[in-house]
Each structure stands twice: as C-alpha cells, then as structure tokens.
Image 1 (spheres, helix red, strand yellow):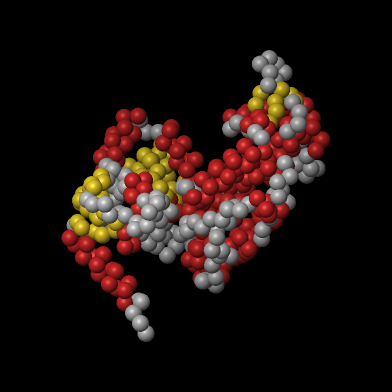
Image 2 (cartoon, rainbow, N blue to C red):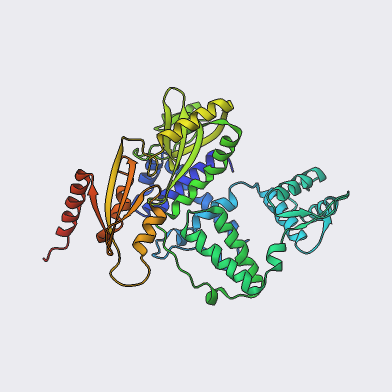
Amino acid sequence: MARESFDKEIQFLRMLSLAGGAYNRQQFAARLGISVHTYDKTLRHLKDMMSSLKQHLPSYQATELTEGINYSYYESADPLLLFLFRAKSLKESESIRLSLLLTLLQSQELTAKEIMDYCSAQMPAEFPPPDEKTIRKDLKYLGDIGVVIRIDSTRPYTYRVANDLIDQLSDDELLDLYDFVDVMSNTQVPSVQGYLLRDTLKKALSNRSFKWDVEDTHRYKYHYHSRILDEAHLHTIFGAIKQRRKLRFLYFSPKKNNSYASQNTNPLFERESNGVTETILPIQVVYDHQYGRWYLIGHKTGKGLIKFRMEGLTQMEESDPASEEEFIRAKNHADEQLRNSWVTDTLRPSKVVARFYNPDRSGVNFVRERVVAQGQWGSIIEESESTFLFEITVNGIFEIKPWLRSFGSSCEVLEPAWLRQEFIKEWKEIQTYYESL
C-alpha cells in the first residue's frame, strides 16, 4: 500500500470511529479533504481489506467493518483499527509467500533452496514464483525480527520458526503469560506490538484446545483506542532520530476542519491544501496518557523547538541528514525547554500545591499510590493522618489541570490562588447541574 494511501486510511478510520454517523457522505468527504468519489472508493477498499484479512484470522477475530466501528462500552481487546497494521505494508504476493514460508518452517528445518522449491510449487498461478535471492532476503528479514532462526553454522544453512519460548512453556505458564500481556496491552500505552504478541499467544493457546468463550474473562474500557493509529509514524520517526535525518511531512492542525488532503499528482485537478509542509529535525516522541495523544518534538531552523500532534502528520518521509553536533545542540535545547513540562508545555514555570485526602475506609490508599506513580518530579509532604501535600513546579498549569481535576473531591488546589479560584468556579458550575428540578 502506498504511503499516501495509508495516511488516508488512518484519517478515514479515525474520523469514522470518533464521529460515527454524525456526518453524511458529502460532509464526511469535505471534512477529510477528499471527493465523495474517493470516499466511496476508500470505504470499498477498507471493506475489501477486512474481507480478505478475515480469511486468515480465527473466528474470534472475524468481524465486519461496520460491526467493529459500533460503539461498545467495553472496548474490544482486539481493536478493529489494528487490522491496518496487519495489512498495510505487504504486497499481496509477499504476504502469500511469507505465509507459505512460515507454515512450512513450523514443523521442519529446511534450506533456502528447499523453501524456494516448495513456495514455487504452492504460489497461486497469478503470482510469479520466487527465486532463491528473494527467499534469502525473506529469511534475513524474518531472522532480523526474531521470527525464524538459523540452525547450522556451515552451509547450506537450515532454518526453522523460533517457537522455543512458547513450546517450552506449560499450559499454566503460557496462560499466565497471556494474561499478563493481555492486561498490559489493554491498560498501558497503546501498543501495536502488544496486541500482536497477544494474538500470537492466543493462537498458541487455541492450538492447545483452550476455549475462549470460557477463558477470555477480562473486559477493558480505553477511551482513546483510535490513538493506536498514530503508531504508524513511530517506525519512521525513530529511524530518522537514530540516523540523524530530518523529516518532511504535511501537517494538519487539530484546530483546522480538514485532517487530510490527497497528493496533487494531476495538475488538472490540483487544489489548495489546508495543511502546512514542514521540515524538522526530530528529537523525541511524548505520549500524554491523560488524553491519549502522541506528540512529535523537533527542531526547526529559525524557529527552534517545535511540537506537533501526531494525528495531524501525513505524507511523512525522511529528508536531509543532520550532523551529530546539530542533533546534540537541538536535544540539549529541547531538554532545557521541557525540563518542567508536565507533557510538552514550554510556558513560564509555576508552582502548584495541592492537598490530597486519603480514603476514609481502611485498605489500599489508592489516592497516594496514584500520586506517587503519576506525580513525576513532584514532592509529597506529610500534613496529617488524613491528608498530604503535593508540590511541583511545571511549565504552565494547563496540562496538569486535568490530572488534578480527575481526583475529584480527593484533591484541593491551594496554589496558585488564581488556579484555586478557577477550580471553585468550575465545581460551582457543576453543582448547578444537579440542583433539584
């Protein structure tokens, strides 16, 4: 799938999952920055992709596109949006060839030539048979990512699937590992790798005759499941950071109505885009767990530190190289600017003091545990048996404010005074919503 096409599918699915049926076809297309014809074509493409993928998935993952988009209070542990990552990067011939290769190596050890002969005989007639160079390239790729291992140290090398970890675990150990991955992938930072590892373990348990209508007892609710789509950019960003290369992309601010624009490949149909073309030196990625947002932090010549919401990035590609000295200077500048940032703010530092109230009932002090876990560099000061103070200096209060608010009556803001007054005003407004009718 072309890079532009994947950008389009990302923004299309994000809007479809978040807006649901709020827009008709014309409004949806206009909001996305595409024509109605492209809207229809993209929807057909996604349905075809889902239909094709379902043929290779177990029954517990088979679902229609419309079924997956429907809102459910308990968010599925197999997000529909994840299917893009299973289908985005492989050509159809490559997908079939790798499937044949991995199936073949599940139960036996073979050389590259033996694998080539088998794949050539099993490939559908409409696809060309692979040569030995292609098979060796596939084996190197699968070896680099740890899917297959090379057995011999002398030629001709033999290969097999790397199933040692799963094969050596007992049923109880494998189930414990699955439960751990299941919980972590659904309650921590959204991770494509976590969901794919969960799928692998689930298939292994299914092969041992575990029944998921009985064993699959966990339910999760994550508010920002669509943010998993932003992981599409992480590989490119981290690769550019590692290689010290700049990134070029078309950016759509979340404040704008449009979130995508097709590339102008035909001058007869060229039209102005609402996006802004940017070229930056990437420095780091920040994840805001409170709102489920990814941020790209970078350096732009003439502007210094610059920040982007990752859902607005499209048409991303590597650009010119940067020197190690240039990267270090930009990194040190960013570290200094973000030193007191709760997430990414670079406003004037402010001291925040809040009083937290311990739970009345005995048992685990979940309020204190959460403050300790999430309070970053803030300090805790003992005040009484029922309360403690939390002090922290942050760049502005806009990013920490939702975190303080989320504690409800267990948190009382003391400083700064104007922030305390803001909270009082907000809670009074909320109180009016519950006055008797």
